[in-house]
Structures are given as structure tokens and as C-alpha cells.
Length: 109
Picture 1: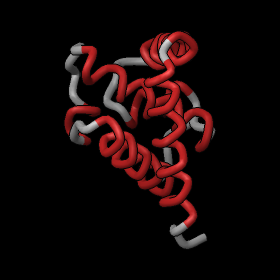
Picture 2 (picture 1 turned 90 degrees about the vertical axis):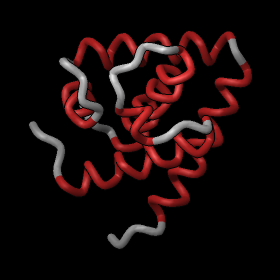
Picture 3 (picture 1 turned 90 degrees about the horizontal axis):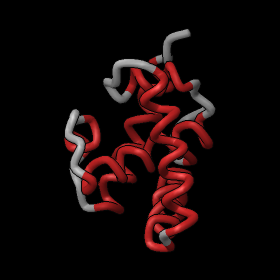
Picture 4 (picture 1 turned 135 degrees about the vertical axis):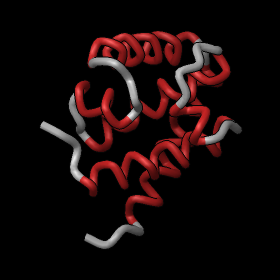
């Protein structure tokens, strides 16, 4: 199943919120770069999309310009482990989630 236009709009909101928290651009989140300074915010955005929007790994992969769902599955496992070990990452996830939810509440239903 493909992500709908509404799903893509909500994913864009998540990316913008995460980019602001981690001081990167949305283009950086979408980029193929493997630099840690960019992969961690990307993983956070994927986690929020999965938890808050309920998109499948395949849908997330498509909206993040990734090859397949395995990339997303790996990213989710990595960020969950990392957030358990690093309180700064866990805090970033909480802040980005709160900003995302605030922006999503402003959308028309």
C-alpha cells in the first residue's frame, strides 16, 4: 500500500520538527548520507512516523527515499537501542515528538 497524500504531508511535518530539534535541514534527513550527524535525526524521524502515524516500514522507506523496508527496520532497531543508552537522544526524540504532535493537531481533520 502506498502512502497517501495526507500521509506524505504528515511525514513532512515530522521531518520538519525533527530537523529543527537536531539542527539539520529536511534535505539532510532525506539525503543518502551515512554521516552519524544525519543518520540519527533520520532514524528519529522514522521512529516518530512509525509510532505516531502508523505507517508500515515499506511506506516509510518510500517517503524517506530508501531502497526497501529493511533499511527502516534496521534504523528503528538502532534508534531504540541508542535512545536507551543515550539520554540526549531520548530527550531529542521526546522534544521532536511533542513538536510533531503540536503541529499535527493544527491540521484540519
